[in-house]
Image (cartoon, rainbow, N blue to C red; front, side, top):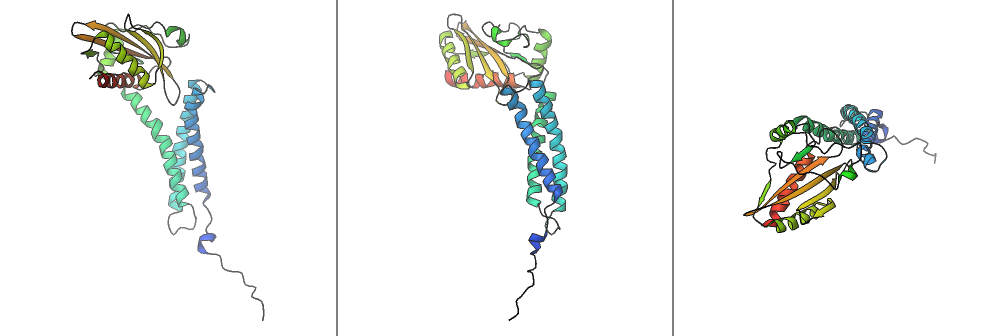
Length: 259
């Protein structure tokens, strides 16, 4: 019996090659995502300063835009029935690069929408002053001297809800609650003085590891106590709302504990 020397026909699936355009888009998307993540973590871990981190994030953002366009074109060329394979990879590239563009894009929009300040306080007429944290801030940090009426007006426009806490508890009880809230929020306690009703702490942001300092002042009142806070960033001209958000978190937890 003669041997059958014919070669089996290749399946339609195996005959379709992966699109190089898809691989390019997915590769750039992954590299951009890694760049975006390490831009902040590198600063947090001490690999570079925040200026270099922002520059890396900027290029990751541009890379994400390019990857999204290339991956979208790759998805079009590898759609069902096309000659090239890689639709799933192309869609993955669109998703990854879309996130790379969306996250910093949202932050940029927020920065533009909020006042360009980094010093937020519940008492703009007599802001609580820092003392213990001053030695920790370093010579390159923002000044803790309050900038006055101009900053107060910008805060009123951007964060009208930032107000003192009028607590229906004694000053001593308010101090105890404030300490509990500081611990609950995970702030690093720098100093606490029960006699004067003062607390100073430092909060470290998750991504870039920025350190922002907080001072809490508790003043006795006839029918309770008044609690004022001030949160100031060590670096940067605009805080993208971080300090106001930090004060809001404190206020919410304080009120929960005092009820």
